[in-house]
Image 1 (spheres, one colour):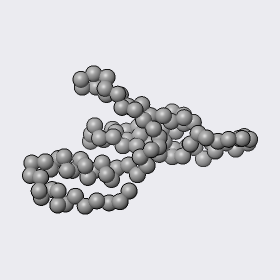
Image 2 (cartoon, rainbow, N blue to C red):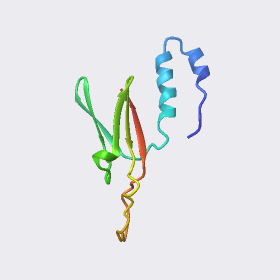
Image 3 (cartoon, rainbow, N blue to C red):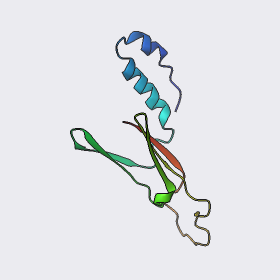
Image 4 (cartoon, one colour):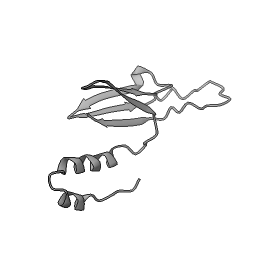
Length: 104
């Protein structure tokens, strides 16, 4: 993804500073847009649910944090959990580390 300079946008959209800031932040947050896949569901007028497909990860492999209106979900596989001693014929479940961020 290339970096886009939104500075001219800030000067021309008076009163929409927050919107321009959110666009700028969203463009920098997530380098891996496709992994892991996720769903966002509206549960109620003011409630949402985020579901992330993290096959192959355990609860201990995941770190979930909310800070200043930003939800961060990070997954990191343990060093000794790479399938040592197993004889895979096909390994299609991605188990690479990831970080997903959502603006709340």
